[in-house]
Length: 407
Ligand SMILES: *Cc1c(COP(=O)(O)O)cnc(C)c1O
Image (cartoon, rainbow, N blue to C red):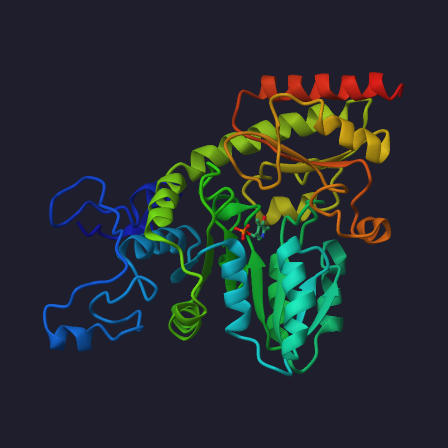
């Protein structure tokens, strides 16, 4: 059943209702999942109207070109980002690479943050140059956001940032980044995976394209891989009909249905992620085995003031440097019991990883240090378990490290 005037609804209402309409045919409260690869035409005229490959076609034709379950979750995510449209991909990297390929041509240039997600870094460093696309990576956090201006050239098409970024939780001023990008005639792309639209809506701050790994907080339960591209109707239509349908990395209807269910609780989950993370950060800041805590919610964090301006709260991700360096970081991985030793983030359960030996092992020690990743740096994705249990687990783990390494 069509809902009226959803634009005036608030976040949690949209998260639950937009794109989750009841089935108009059977009255099913939860609409069925359209697990079909193709769609049958009544006659040749309807087949023509389907406009094969045209997302504006009047009838569905083939699931790679569009599927009602996938379209429903697109509407939900667009509504939450206060954007006109969204497009789902098979993974966060599928979304990122499609959105880059759709705009860049040989001879173009992009400016990207020096700390982007590992896969994005690999695509920009190893694949884009093979197509004659030049990439300049600069520090874009705090006052160094001005570096973007200096790095831009007449052929710069995209400025690409992530905030908070991985794994140092450094913050980029999105309003400034958007102004600088637009002054130079480029589009601003923002990977909003860490913040989620509940905490930060980059389109409202001037961004042109927002990217998500829906694998993380949006789904929230660790049981799917997916991505989203969010932006204006014109850009998204171009990405869809001219790129994604041929590049082919589309989301499956089953994953779209699971994601839709996960997003319904995004707001309530984020409230607990943020509250728990704040308590854990304060606990770690006062622990004698911890040298430094990187959490934008702490006043000691260099991005705290900007984060306060552009985010509703500070999220569930943090990193900290454990005393004792590489060995201590590694030993802590084997000492925690509640935390799962795993990459990824944004699940209801707490995850831990050692950046130097896991996510950033491919970087040299010097490269790691230049982007602020110490040998003893541990990244936490704080879940929504009872926070006392999370803190107790870290405390016993840190005590174990202290005892074993005689620190
Ligand atoms: C995980 C992640 C990605 C990549 O998403 P996949 O779903 O794993 O392809 C991109 N950006 C950020 C910030 C991420 O955390």
